[in-house]
Amino acid sequence: MSGSAIIHTLHSSAEKPKRFTYPFCYEPHPLCLAAAEEVKQEIATMPLTEGKMFGVLVVESAGGLAFLAAYSGLLEGRNDWPYFVPPVFDAQQPNGYFKTREREITLVARSSGKEGAGVEATTSKEMSQDLQLWLFHQYQLFNARGETRDLVDIWQDYHSAPRIRRRFPLPPGGTGDCCAPKLLQYAYSHQLKPVCMAEFWWGPSPKSLIRHHGQFYPACRGKCKPILTWMLQGLDVDPDPEEAAFPRLDIEVVYEDEVMAVINKPSGLLSVPGKTTDYSVATIAKQRWPGALPVHRLDMGTSGLLVVAKTKEAYIALQEQFVKHTVEKRYIALIDGIPEKNCGRIDLPLTFDPMNRPRQIVDYKKGKSAVTEYEVLETFGARALVALYPHTGRTHQLRMHCAHQEGLGCPILGDELYGTKADRLYLHCDHLQLSHPVSGEKMSFNLEKPCEFQKICLSL
View 1 (tube, helix red, strand yellow):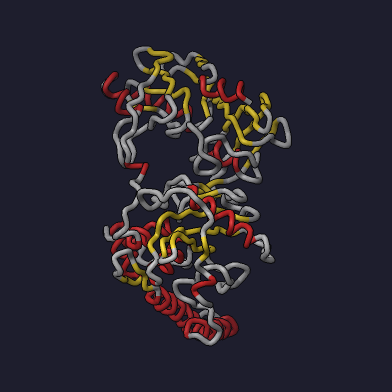
View 2 (cartoon, one colour):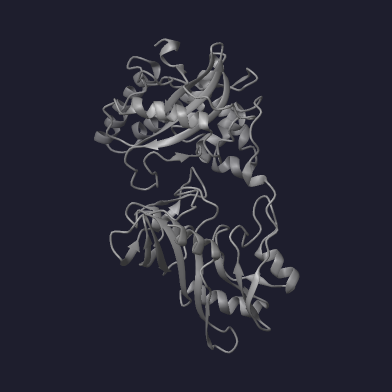
């Protein structure tokens, strides 16, 4: 395959960005949007039956700006489609070492299956592990300085802490075959300077993950962050938005007595200290009421009612109510789309995506039960305002249940993980009912819709 078939002319008058894309959190640059449109036209001519992540990399070449295109892993069982960059290492050659050795291992495994578990089974497992290790060593990856390291070295250097190294001694299968490493590897090896990059999903969504046709997504953190941390060295890259300074938002006290408080948390404020900042509801509460602790959490983007305990005894009594699901909670959300039914029950078990935390996936075997009831309150053009009643409290439960194709199939507006970005996440806890931790009296708290909700609804 010639280089000219892979390096494509870019038809755009947009200005170059000052720095290269930070791949794990970004807005696609206009140059990437133009390149992606051309790739979509190419995809439309292909006989595809599966959904797949595609990527574009805008580069500077001797002839000016151009772009490269890639797909993640294999596409319809192939890694040699014209128009797209080749893999970092081609393990699919029928007579190559990897495929030849793979066939030998299969024969040993079949032999062990016929004769019962024993030496042959152990041998085939060891042979598979050795072959996987050999494959990882074949991935010799460049960075922008022209240096090379193999995948095992890169991985173990990134996961250098002993505790993490024990959990992740070697990369998972498929590492190095995502779009971003393929694109950068081809650019570096052909003396092309990376300018900006973006990835988008095309086709039907997988069962467990949330992927919307045509939508842009960040690079995966589990497999790609160790690799790209190496490959981007030598490039001037956009700063990580997650390490930027957080705004010093304040809390509104809705109710307060000697042992507890109920606050209205604004969108954009953490409930508890995060990786890059301590500023949160927890730190504000401790300054205002020494020893106070939030009893539960809301995602940073979610606004609304949150309970704070001022004493240890109140904390235990209140948290027990949340654990036993005796607290009545209602959230309102503005969603992209109109649900098929006006009300219903969503029961989709959830667990962490091990390769892309903090994202969640639906997993019917290993996931934890997650149940939400919903009702449509109003519709505004192609959007709806819904009430959500969670019966469990899983991470990202409401966001997943709204966005997933087996839930409402309508992501919450502003949900960067499972939908599209907006000025905020349009999810708000507007009702809580619980028992007072000392008197046992039933207490009910309600909030109005935030003004951002009102403005959006009135504008539709």
